[in-house]
Length: 97
Ligand SMILES: Cc1cc2nc3c(=O)[nH]c(=O)nc-3n(C[C@H](O)[C@H](O)[C@H](O)COP(=O)(O)O)c2cc1C
Image 1: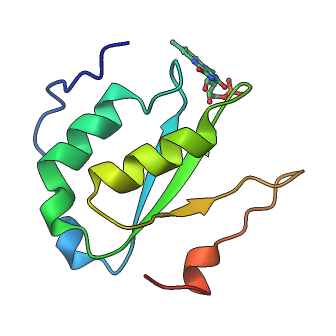
Image 2: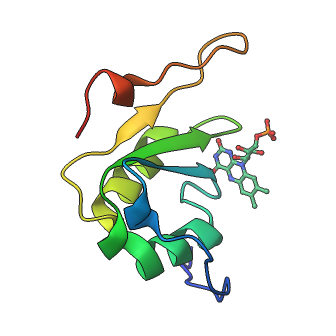
């Protein structure tokens, strides 16, 4: 599986203006999607804190969360886990990086 970096154009927001950046991706072939990889590569020096939201069809989200954390050069990122139903928990608010 290629871990491609693609051209996603320029961002008009500076991540360093924000206390927390929430990065979201579907699992694609047990990897993050290529637009997110490209965004991280372009902006990671400007991230102050990172949380990760990952959707999946069956499996791979745990690996992808770790991959995102490593690519962001963070010891850990905080997964935002989808619970049963439509509620979301945000551990980042309880455990800031
Ligand atoms: C090209 C492609 C590859 C995918 N690979 C995986 C995979 O490896 N593991 C998985 O759990 N889901 C995989 N999926 C499913 C997506 O992660 C899933 O559709 C996405 O998280 C959105 O969820 P939803 O379809 O329920 O809206 C893949 C989807 C596509 C289009």
